[in-house]
Image (cartoon, rainbow, N blue to C red):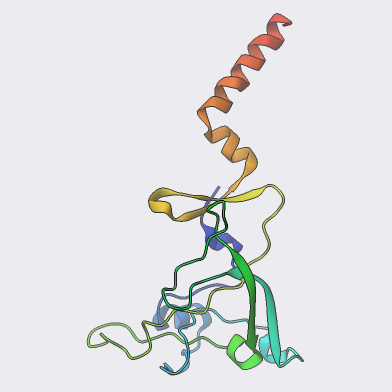
Amino acid sequence: MNHSISQLNLFPTYATREDFQAATLEEAPPWNPYRFPKNWFDPNAKTNPSRVIVYEHAFAVDANTGQVLENPDGTPKFDKLALSRDEAATVNIPPTGPGQTDVPGADQTPVPVPMRALAPNEVIVPGFGNVPELWTTDELQEKDPYSAILKYLRAIANKLGV
């Protein structure tokens, strides 16, 4: 299984303006330094009758540092995300490439990507470099060496009738 947390994203994300154009065959709107960076868009937002769209799940982030906030158990914290219909419908991707250093506004905390809720058997755990990963509870049990040993001991016990 792919353990990338991006599996929870409701919408694709685009690292650069060129990625956006390659995927959508449209040019990204001009960079607006007065808006937060946003590398995703909701394709249904333009036709949504509500002026404000509320997404039930997105990572809660610190507005100053951009760091994902954590629950007491160390897992990433989710929160609701409310955006205007116009904001939800478009990207705001800063220019990159030669001569594009210190782009005004590009260092602001990006708008988090709306996500689906975790399935009952899914958990988020810290991975390599403390990057969050998405795992199923069954996969975690298989990954745990003690679980594998217990599994084999149970199989032996069953064979012996113990």
